Length: 252
Length: 306
Ligand SMILES: Nc1ncnc2c1ncn2[C@@H]1O[C@H](COP(=O)(O)OP(=O)(O)O)[C@@H](O)[C@H]1O
Ligand SMILES: [Mg+2]
Image (cartoon, rainbow over all chains, first blue to last red; front, side, top):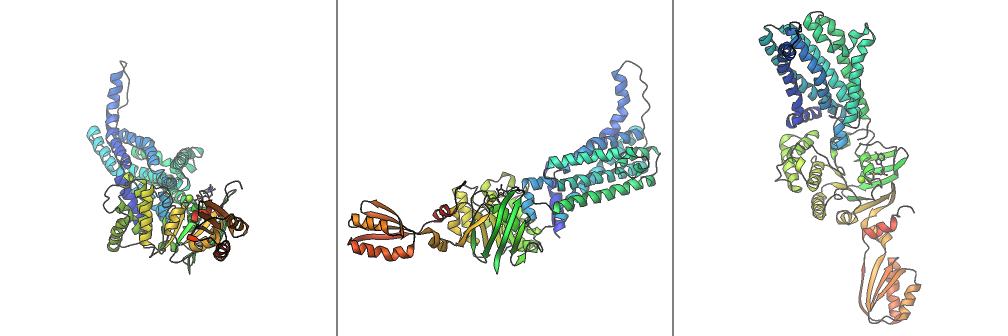
């Protein structure tokens, strides 16, 4: 019961405070712009110089590659910026004191924040994906819905993982800047980890960022992505648990 | 059963001892003033009472339940922190609804309660978001949210300290309006405010209990009395004799008016008429007045560095 009330407050807050609209809008812009830029880029490059440059013919795969590249760079940073303060900022401002002196479960509170963040980001990906799909089809004539959906789903799991450690860090740290620092640190760490060992890389959540391309180009099948997908979800639970464990013992 | 029982509570922050072996009983139905200067340990004590900070040592029972055992007592208490902070995007009504729902209150009863409380704190006409509220409005909303669950004990941390005289009066009036229904634990460093609403007080300093009791009792115990006598004449004899008795700690003569500081009220009450009769002066007027909390406080709480 408490959990439902807390979740509803988080969702209402997302809807009522403008800054959260950044995520859906940003993702949507990526959805529109990625195929357009991919289509126009060769022409722009050719127009800019007098020399003959041989630009390889762009395909629908390149359009989606661009889409995931944007999501993975700017999109992920935006997600961290948006959610790094979800718990930490309430502790810092003092709203947490008001809530946690009531019969409220801290665990439920953190999970409500994680759940609302996941809901927002996943819902943001739907129109962005549709835009990308439609524009790619218009501009390139073809696009595989099955493969692009697979790639998008894999990326969605990666985003959940990022939200997991961001909200976890937010629960541990006292300020949103500190939580952001820890989150970026974890992001860098998880992107470096796959490089250490070829064998272990398929279990690394960080590997998921490369999978959309492999899936789109057909060099990998979805089932090969399972170990990393599973480990991303397990890591999400672990990060949240660590965050909750620390938060339960904190003085606010 | 006491509403709050604090038994040798100690709270340390590293080398700093914020609360030191504090023992305190707050009887049900009282408005209990928890007095101390800035940094005395009031907020820390309250944070422990609300389960926001953990005691270093000692035991705390609220409504008969040890707070170490479970947090279910929070269902029956209310809390207004020293600086209440809200979600700026909510309206006062929305915040109260959210707070009420966290206590599991159902919608029909909650709506009635919300309107009742908004009326009590004078925010019932307010439609704007909390982001635009003044400090005083936030304080009053804080008071309303502390009462949303119809608590048995409400903890107020310096509810008047940040307010101007009008804001203070409004908050004190609200407290006076609900104090018959709930035990109030009122922390403050403003003695005049405590004197206006509290029946019982504890004074703490540097984390330690200095004294505890009914205000009237403390006045008798520590305050002495100031006695003012208007007499027909002031013979030197009388002044000299007054200077010799031990119950009189101060004499001031202004024309035909004598002002005495009586340290032992009982003895003064018997000794003074005797003295006056001996010296054969006529009495035109005689009155005595009780010291206020401030005089007691100043007497008991040593200045820094001593
Ligand atoms: N979180 C904390 N960390 C370190 N010291 C603290 C903390 N909270 C309070 N203190 C110290 O404990 C003492 C009591 O503070 P506090 O309870 O806020 O006093 P009051 O509310 O009576 O003004 C002060 O010396 C203060 O500096
Ligand atoms: Mg304080």
